[in-house]
Amino acid sequence: MNRPSRRTVLGVALTAAATAALPRTGASAATDLAVSSWQQRWAPSAAADGLAAFETIEDDRADSHPAGHPHIRVENDDYRWTMHTVDRDSATDRQRHEVSGMRSPAGGAFLEWRPGQTWRTTYSMYIPSSLKATTTFTHIMQMKQPGNGTSPIVVQSLRRVNGAQTIELQLPISGVLVGRTSLDPLHDRWVDVDFQIKVGDGSSGSVRWILRSAGSTLVDVSKTGVDTFLADRVRPKWGIYRSLGDTSGSLQNCYLLTTAMRGYQLVSGSSGVYQAEEARIVQGTIDTDHAGFSGKGFLNLGPADGSYAEWTVPAAAASAATLDLTYANGTGADRPMDVTVNGARVATGRVFPPTAGWDTWSTTSLPIALKAGANTVRVTSTTAAGGPHLDRITVR
Image 1 (cartoon, rainbow, N blue to C red):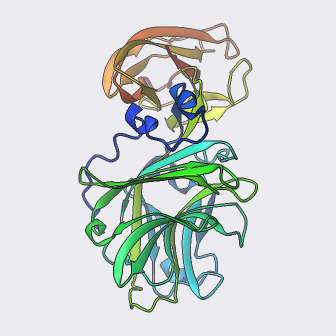
Image 2 (cartoon, rainbow, N blue to C red; image 1 turned 30 degrees about the vertical axis):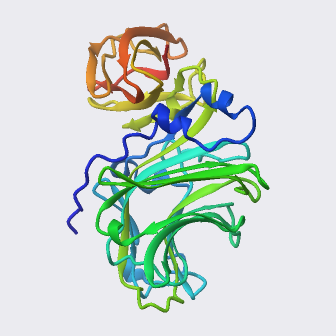
């Protein structure tokens, strides 16, 4: 298949305006948001991380169509879900190919969305004209409590309403339609999705749903005072999950693409510290076999020229800042790295000299410039030996 052309994906995920527009509940919400920021927790590369980016994979779990395997796969740097009309779920009145959850880093621990927390996912999706809205359910994103047979908490669905194809967001346990718009203009093009949820039981939850395409905002709706929790935790799901009970003749062989999937958590009183495990990592692992690190572990970049780690750093306004990199180098030789901010190199072959051992951590600092909104900070190994071990970066 030829990959559909794609423009730059959602570029406003962390702007101050978007943060300020979050649904608010309670008298102190404005104060809370003023000292909060979105911290990137998940940033898989489909090409590099594959399906290890997800907690679970439900690819033809009834083994109904072995000739069609894999129904969920990586294609270029996109995730692709392929649905055939012959595919069946373990409940034979429906079809399901879905992934759930977020592992960060890929293959590692999964992120848990708990009551009182606010989370955000952004990604771009491509819905071909063969993936149509139906008279019964066709879900392409869900939020659920883990476990079989539990009701969905949130569904993004393709539904026919009075014969017209629409895309909608509903909260089934609250019985609330958050928003709906025509699907026809979104077929065969990339659409940016920005979904936010405050996890709350009873009436303490909130959601915001934004769809953008070709530079235009098509949907931007919020609901507060709603139920967004059942038990345990909330877990996101993506893919194609549809009923065979459609009466419009819309069930065809089809597919869905997503790319640039990101996950953020709203963190109060952010200190400007970004742990190694929060980075997007290419050729490296999060390890714990040396003492003295903070957070859940340290980054062990692979022994390769070009291995790198990348963090997303929000800023309320353009400003000068200092970047601190906390590292260990237990070898007898320098481990140089390039440092870039928003794609511009701010240090070439920055030297990370030896420390007293892998358990001894040191900090090196350099000035950087931040823009308003989301900033990308990347450190890249420049020799075949790779970089030093990195514990965290601090932006101040």
